[in-house]
Length: 166
Image 1 (cartoon, rainbow, N blue to C red):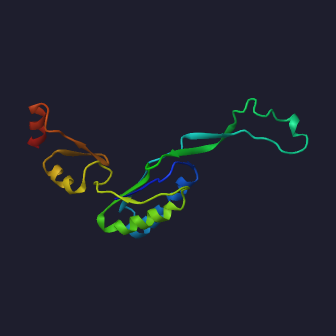
Image 2: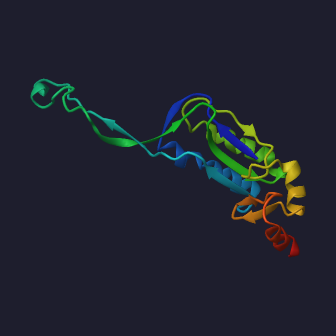
Image 3: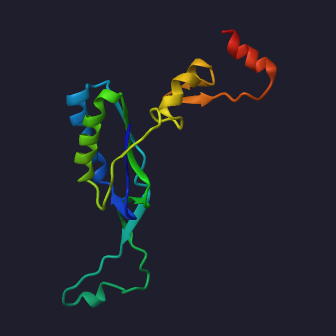
């Protein structure tokens, strides 16, 4: 239903991810506990480091400058590229305005500029919502977890007969 792609290249520290899930509270309040599914599309795996320097009198005996400057781990960040999707929400069409408001609220928790994009796809699948029901009726898609599996028209005839015999 809705997603939030980044508009500029950034490092997003670990803090915004739990904070942006505060939009989950708004969604639970407006859509109900089972009325939506949030998927975080980025995770902070990139470790940033710091080379601590002292800046007081007599500090020259304690530090080595840029010799051995590989620092200690300071935290983790996620690398966000331009147009990369940060977060996705799927829900029914009647909850569309609640999703947009929840993503708008979560947008302030991330650094940089984001935009809210309303997808024409069905849920988290790669298939258009208008064609999805027809493909399910023709048994070209099989439910598989929170996604679907595409069954092409080509292949062994025995496999096709086994699928359509049920």
